Amino acid sequence: MRKWLVLSIALCLCGSGLNATAAPNPVSTAARPPVHAAIDASLRARIASGTATPAEISASIDRQGAYAFVASLDSDESDWLVTQIGTGKNAWVELAPRLALGSDASVSTGLIIALARALPRNPAAVLKAVDPEEGDSHILAISRVCGLPFLEGTTPKGYREKALYAVSTATRANPQIRARCLKALRGRQRGKPDPGMPR
Image (cartoon, rainbow, N blue to C red):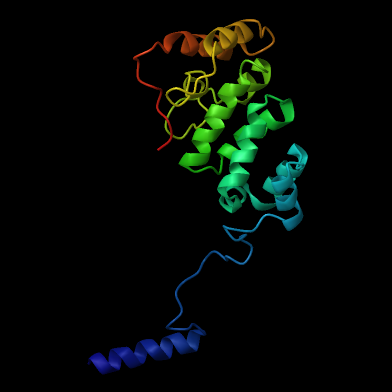
């Protein structure tokens, strides 16, 4: 009986043109880009020399996707990128939310600290880049960026006062986001736990 069933199934499969050993594959993976696609060699060279532009980085993210782009970075390259974001220049700050979409815990922490460093320098740009939503999946949440996320002993001198002044005078920023950032800056007193950081 068992042999008859096996033979019948095999004949049915052959008759229908199906391969009995082939696993079903309803979605083609041919169009999917490789997860760890390499950054263009010329762009990598410009990152190494410190001459890459935000437009070039943005174009590479467009081609590869945020996850593949961030996965392609080595530690020196990711450190250089977050340093540029920390300068507070508009075009660099605008890259932070795009990079956050593909970042791991290490890069996420770097992005948060970079935006925090940029906050007194360019509060309008940073308040536009932060994520108004809270939660583990919201890397650049206001409570993180505005909550003094620096490692112990690395907070720039006079940072809180400078950041409070800068944010309070950023009158063109979204008023709700500005108010929440000010609250986070004021609320982080010594001895209070840091806001949740990516793990």
